[in-house]
Length: 439
Image (cartoon, rainbow, N blue to C red; front, side):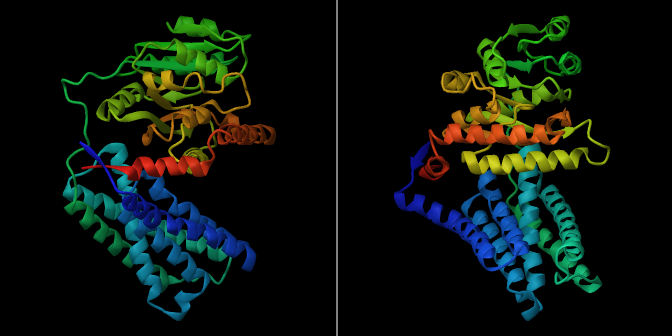
């Protein structure tokens, strides 16, 4: 049973959760007017960080604590309060590392399920220790590359690491005390939804062959695999038929038209999407099915990836940087989680509701981002970081390729913001989250 909160409750949620984000944005402007590029970069980093709780749907108390602490840390560094108050640096490391550890645990629990009380303590402490080390490495890099006024040293580093570990342990204790039961999973008497996998492809027979081979090895077989042959001149359709896939031909060139044609043809309860160069693991289909079966109110899920053909040692880092930037900026633009076409799934009913609204005939629109715009913010979309695929880095190779992707992104934003600008979308998101709470 759900009940509607008062208008005052909605405004409390808005003011407490987002006033600090507004201050962070103002801080970037102040830094640009009054100080140098390093100050702008500092507060831009803070601005990005304070968006994280909103992106993951954190509660108001945690949201305010996170945003306030990080904004204070940024101003303390810029105004050199750490030099004036020697113990302040340790206090900030204590609080911020604890909050980062708690946030990292929340994200891990969302992906893989919460731990027991002891498990929550151990995992949170370990995540906090890692965050503390990365923080110190970041300070060292900043000292060497950006500003030698950034304080580093043996004693300073050890002290920061010690209090950071203490802060993460405190966060772990709090999470252990409040640890819920295991994440809801569909029980034996709850049937998993049937999955249709759609793969748009144009002149990509070799990559498609590998993708379909991996789909044939799934621990949960999809009800169908649909390959949309987007006016290919190679053996794309022959490869698809050899693997038993249904071939849908779409003569209008462009991923938006091809993807939509595949979704229209799908018969499964859930439509999962891969690109021809995606390399799914054996549990890719079953993970989507279990995640959507466990949460009937969830309309779509999206995942992450690794660039399998990037130089060794950089594959995960490059993908994390690219997808992390995409998801953060996409969330700001949408008011909710974006979708990534190389690894996503959504309910067929959701597609039926928006299929006449999506852009189909403009090849210079990102179809996954456009679909995310049409689905939200009234429908829930969740990022599942552990649900991942291998993908090719080819889409980022070359300046012209990167420029084309950026131009498509801006075109997609302009098309959809003309319908509902971001402030309207965020208002609707706040109304959805703050206007109705479980009773």
